[in-house]
Length: 366
Image 1: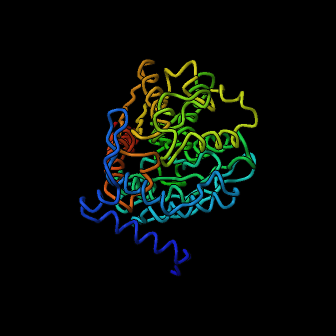
Image 2 (image 1 turned 90 degrees about the vertical axis):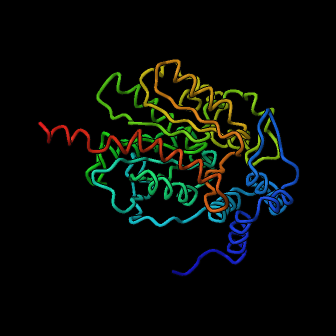
Image 3 (image 1 turned 180 degrees about the horizontal axis):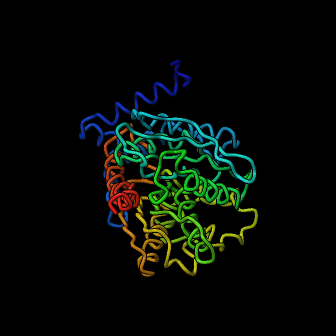
């Protein structure tokens, strides 16, 4: 297959992998003195990445024309990601009331059908990102959690502001459950997940389907996986003060995302934007919430996990204190992202993979 990536990206990718393999002493020389904030010490690979990106990127996405910003994020996803081999990868179109949205199915070898499934939403502030942004994580989770991942390319703002992404996320989850046989998955073992804005969409799908199920028959997720999620656009939590500048996700970038996503700033109080503000969460899907220590979104992600626990929802919370926002996507550039995702895969095995086929087995056993 012809490599469609320009020489500059291929060189950068090799450099990223080379940096990840350097001895710790050399990495420390590149990174400088350890960074400690709020009692947390930044992971060495995260600090190296921060230093290198600061030197290599003269303009960040929010200062670029929208098309260039999107291209930059897609480029970085490929440079720092990894194409772990997966037995089956195929592109799909998920029908929606507005037409159809692209999606991509990932299924590893040896998975028994019907398998568990994770409907996954990429990050990018509801403005940036596409299927390439989630490719590395989708491959990793499919392989290590032994399940089917269906990544969804929801509509982006500002062309399609809120609630377009929410509508697409709900339509995608419902479609996968209702057409589970076509995809070789167990409708009782379909979860939702995502990173950053995608984690927000996963949380909102869990909230909205639970609300609808109180009134009528409606499929609900078996689990929600929230990686560094946005849960509250209505205010800025303390982690904004601590990590608002100089990291992969800044306060200014979150402001830029919000301005593009919401046609009216008052919508930030809508639970479909800020799930932390939802009044009733007692019956939402069990959750696994992972937050990054060096991240403006850290505190609101943790607050949402505590809100779920207080309402009686099984919710695991894991703070990876040394990493930065979106570092989970950098599976090709160091051990830290892979270690985080191995834990996530373990949670998916317990929450989803172990459920697949259980009802069928129970019926057959009678």
